Length: 470
Image (cartoon, helix red, strand yellow):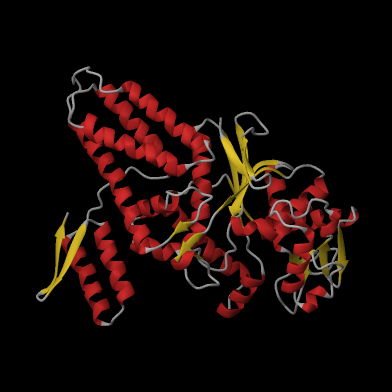
């Protein structure tokens, strides 16, 4: 039986959806003020893989994810670029949708934008005020955090610790408008001529946390099966979502809270825009094959950190190449044999055993690392006992179909050999030579890696750069 680690209970629980064979799933999307980096993309891929596996197990999945298309960062960035908030959002969203499609992320069932739910947000806040869970203050509206008795349980923090943290991070101007340091904004009054909407509380815009509660409840109902996001969202975002939602509906907001770990860089530092140690997904796709990049992001259990480094990329490339090469070789072998091939069995029972073991691994909280161990064992068996051995065509197709199923769960397209012309190779080599000449060694390394990904090895000699095709 499928078990999911629930952040709220801090243990693995048997998965029982609200409706038989149907799963409701909400995953927090990006604030669209800039391109996402691969740390953000890891969350997208992690929950896309969860969705794919649920579908493989026979569930219908209604998957909702949002764009936060108005907040302080968007207002500031739009002002810097002399565009409207909506123009900025539309541009970044277009880039996001293109880039995540490149790494084979399934289209969501419903994609929401915060600014499309302003009436519902205003209604939600109005009802919280009526119930005594929120109050107006100088154009803002705040949630009475202490009134929600189990606040802090999701992020495993005490009220005392949270009070200290709130006091340290809230500016004095905002603090003066709050009854309690822990209270958080549901509605922010308009400042100057920034973007705003009319409301019973005055002109303003939604706070960050209220958006996801409203969009989730509007699209999926008061209680959903799974709510996902990066582990940095546990507090305050998801803690606040839970508090405001359950205060209003008096029902559990989420049955299974799931959070993925970060992508880290050298020194195990979290990849983030604030630290400046990131590479955008768009830039990564210029360097790495999209299918390989998907594999790199999916290869590690979603609750464990994924290190982005030269060594980890190289190891992932070796593992991905094993999958791609065996997949191509098996397909070529099947395409080349006669339909009248012998009926000799080469292990149908083994195929079922591999299938069962893969499911057992993934049923343990989507343990992709254990599942990949079984995949690689399967590849070794194919190479040693299947390819170029006597077996029936039906059995070979069965063997191939299981591998295709697994690639589908991982989100990998069937690997193909990318063709590149000699002139295109020379153009990339000339770009690399120019980068080395100008001492842009980062670009030089990226171009070398791109050539390697295309099966082109290069050697720098006294007579120039030479290349060979694998």
